[in-house]
Length: 304
Ligand SMILES: [Zn+2]
Image (cartoon, rainbow, N blue to C red):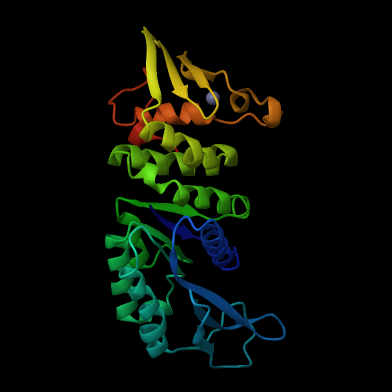
């Protein structure tokens, strides 16, 4: 599972990447190796450089402001130490290439200073092409290297916003923790999972976004979704849940489920959202040409 997080400076992408890695290491569910960029600030809080920290906790400065009188948000005159990028950042990323199977490599971030090193992007490209699990971040999505990564078919691009940044750590942690179920889906279903994630993030349905990974992909991979009735424009499905089976009806263009989240009752009182059972059906039928009469789903899922 590969995520490319895009965010403007100061949105907290390094903190987000660190938080997800810490959660995964805490649960020992997946081994992690990679780089996090850290801002170097002067006494006034102005950015005067960047350092990189590897997974062993060692760090090196790879960019420093050359004009100390400039106190702007971003240093106008910067010196980039390419040997540090080549022999510290790239070395750490190359160790990820040879680490244990099913490990996660994190790359925070893929920015203009790092991209001055040709070895850096060659290694990033190789990681995106060969590794199962990547968590990467970038400030600008206009750089040609980022445009190339965004085009890879198995990469989920997520925009970090003020609204979603606090909700993303448990969602991304759940995604990697359940990646074995994700790998059991076909490519069309995997694309649908990524499209649904962005739809629920956009609609601030964060419970749905987390359940997409914690519950729905497992239900589909374990074939717990069954159509039990089809009558004209009405369909009924039964989806195996963690505690019991749920009955979901598709009628007049909408789903109806018997669970608490769908109705906003029980522990979800006042907060109805798209439930994991409905999501399971959407993923399960993603490959069908017209799974639900009257609406376009699968590859044509609208984000907002
Ligand atoms: Zn439900």
